[in-house]
Amino acid sequence: MIAPQSKIVEMFDNLSADDRQELALHLYQRAQGDFLSSMTAAQRVELEAGLAEADRGEGDAEDDVFRRLEQKFSVEL
Image 1 (spheres, rainbow, N blue to C red):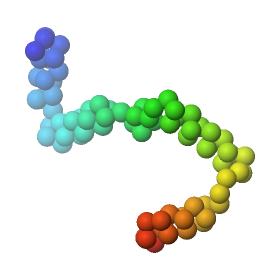
Image 2: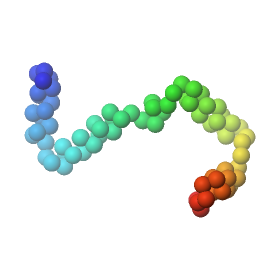
Image 3: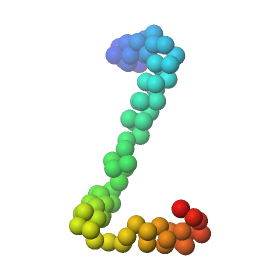
């Protein structure tokens, strides 16, 4: 371990248990990235196009989409 890493671990060890847990969760979530960063460029383009369509009031109504999903997956949403 290099010196800066050792210093970070030392500082971490000096935190309260609650603070260590909160920091560890924050770092874990940050390391995972967010939803958008996990998408491919093509998926982001498709998402942007869908959002633009919705902004223009185009596309299927929410009730129609949920009805199709309920039928497709035999669930009630």
